[in-house]
Figure 1 (cartoon, rainbow, N blue to C red):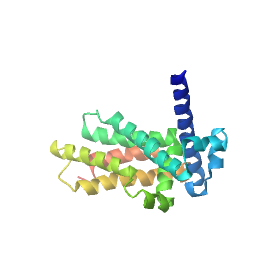
Figure 2: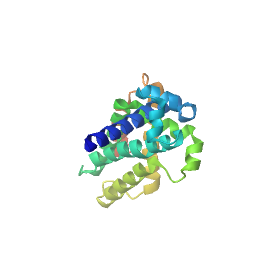
Figure 3: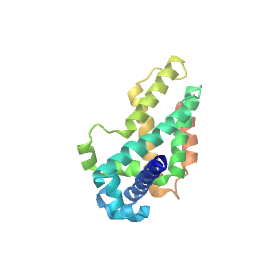
Figure 4: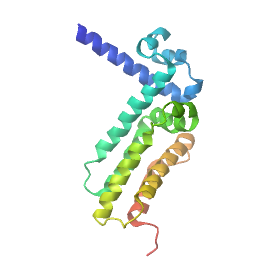
Length: 199
């Protein structure tokens, strides 16, 4: 009985996190209220406070638990691909698929980072895209060692790849009827594989 109660509590907490992200993504965290989150989760407003002391704590948990989990899942799903350039492309496509399958997660990650200066003032060390940057840097180091790509500035390469991913996701979220994100991913693969030189 105690184990079942514990599982129910965990599930309700997870439900609140997931429904909070949906509302944060739709309205922005600064415009969202605990009442909005409770309504979206189909629970009483007071129930949210059983699990989270404030909207700020809930926002932080959304950032830390949900976003970190989604990003780590993508990294782990592609980490075993032997060919470094295929791994880099698969990483990009996996992120594209996250956006397509869970647009509210992508919108939350993409938009919240641009709109909520207060959050980053409170949590200056939190940088969800740093994990992506570190992963791409690791791939680049391997690719250089294997002579798949030339010696280059690894930091600049990682910022270029992750920055392009982030911007493409933001554009797709706003203009998805006009942007074929999978076609864009294939073009990115071509550029990464063959470069931009004509010869």
